[in-house]
Image (cartoon, rainbow, N blue to C red):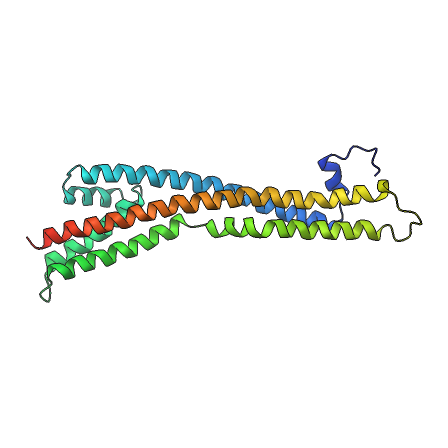
Length: 228
């Protein structure tokens, strides 16, 4: 291959060394998985925001808590994270209030409901944060993997000139161009992953703040009901 040839991306990839091709293939696979998780997480967070808004409107509109609880139980597999947190807290509160075992007072009932909501909160956060670690790893590691492919390709290009008496740009440039493709693919995999990770981390943090605020406000409502 000489400089007069058409050095398009496919030609460079086909003429790369075996190690560089393996690096490129790995980066393409990681990039594919990264984009798959990016779209999955985008839909999941968008749905979580929509479901949270819907439940907050229903909750603060003055609907009966028992009716909201029954609705959450009947549609357990389709409700949002906030509604499942509410369901866990109200179920524990109702169980303690109906039993009244051991002289359970208002504080103990509310504390039990709060612990149940906290456990549900952790489960929901684990679900929302799923695959974020993969995006973070992709964003931080992919450029270095691509750089490894580039360094290896440049070493291979220069080693091929060992028996050449006079090296020219036409002999060196194609090999270097092939190697640099690995870095380009690494950046292509890393940049969207970093952007998505930062964006989704911010969105999930906002949802977590809304969940925690709701748990505190709902605990106050349960305390007022318990002391009646």
